[in-house]
Length: 179
Image (cartoon, rainbow, N blue to C red; front, side):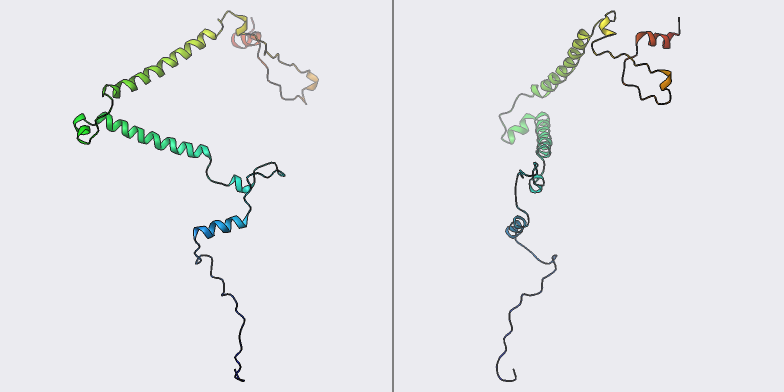
């Protein structure tokens, strides 16, 4: 400015603000995330889904569990409100089409009886499928494994014995003694 000539400076960007003070719109945030890592659902070279596909939202089982629990709570609240609210109160609210109050007790009773009967029938079918105690199939079957007896020379390096069945003779000797 000595010569009367005005010196011009080149424009430089302002210093970056700290990340906690910068506010971005949701659209800017999404576009920055897309630029940071490419969104690929399947990477054929690795044989597994990419990181972006694995880290994309909650699992379906979590969503179904959440929706199921909310639905159960709402259905229980509606059922209890219908079962305990007197009919004149429901009519005054404009609710005129609803099942008879008989079903408020009948359906839970039917469900409890059905569950109890299904347990009894299941146990009965298991008893019918079990062979009688006098049958040899209660003692031996096609999957029976005899115990391997190791020689006394292998006493020091004896391996862990494989899974096997204990014979009836050994069981009787252990329980009732040698006769």
